[in-house]
Image 1: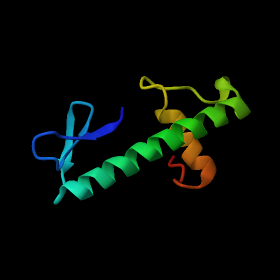
Image 2 (image 1 turned 45 degrees about the horizontal axis):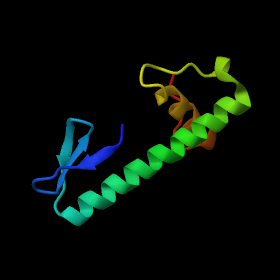
Image 3 (image 1 turned 45 degrees about the vertical axis):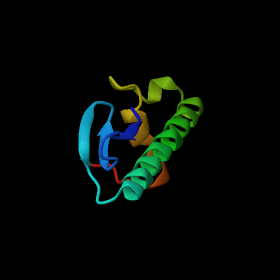
Image 4 (image 1 turned 180 degrees about the vertical axis):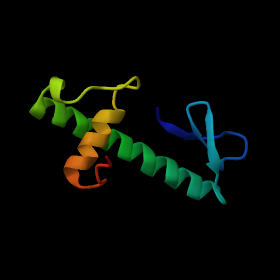
Amino acid sequence: MAWKVGRKVGRTLYDGDELIGLMDTRELAARVVAAVNSEEVFLRELAQHVVDYFGEGELTPSADGCSELRDRARELLGLRKLTV
């Protein structure tokens, strides 16, 4: 789910209805939300490319539909080491 900035103060970060945190300024909150949401879009697109390349049997989606795909995509790009 996309992150958003609260409406009253303009510094509160939410993931859907879940409170994430409070930033020092409205501008910083907007930049954080934009960065997180653009990463989500990138990773969803990348995950789709991974599924297209490897096939769906190789990557089992979890309840939210993309977290394991995102993890696998990050692993393939070397963005996060695989933990055992």
